[in-house]
Amino acid sequence: MKNFIFASILLALLLTVNAATFRRALTFVPCDLKNAVNVAIVPKIPKSGKNESFHISGILTEHDITAQKTKLSIAYEDINGKGLGKPYTQPFTASTKAGNPFSLSATRVPTPKLPSSYLIKVAVEDPSNAIPLGCALARVEKI
Image 1 (cartoon, rainbow, N blue to C red):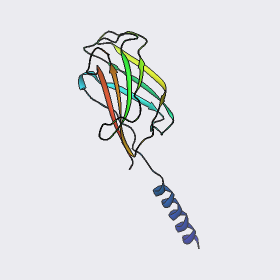
Image 2 (image 1 turned 90 degrees about the horizontal axis):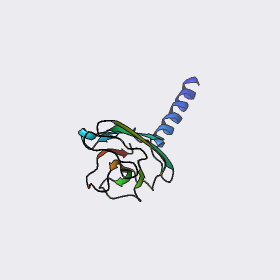
Image 3 (image 1 turned 45 degrees about the vertical axis):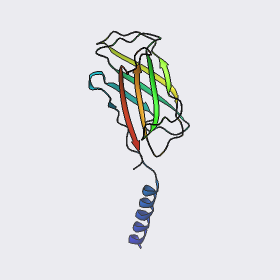
Image 4 (image 1 turned 180 degrees about the vertical axis):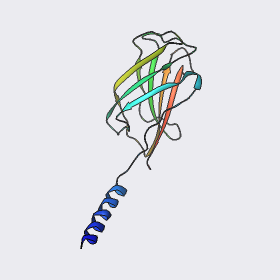
């Protein structure tokens, strides 16, 4: 009887675990090793239609950050690079010289309807420069 109860509990536990959809932990990798951007996100895995908080930090080696001109851009894309919704942008509020650490928090970043696999691109951009000053990329997939 004890074995039957134990087996039933074990089976129920296994069915519950396998029924849940899991996503891997987010790992942001730099787009450019020279100007890497560190990204932390809360909650750790975005949910469609919910707001997220991003904390971005790093050191840009070649470019200054100019208050109200340099912008943070957060974009969700499908695996093929097609945008999912409008990218979130926020200007930096403080200037930082190249070679010095910077940080910026973006709260209430809207999350679009997400497919099972997608990309998150976080970039530090200057509107007068077509190439991002620094960026990081994360790929999210259901497992």
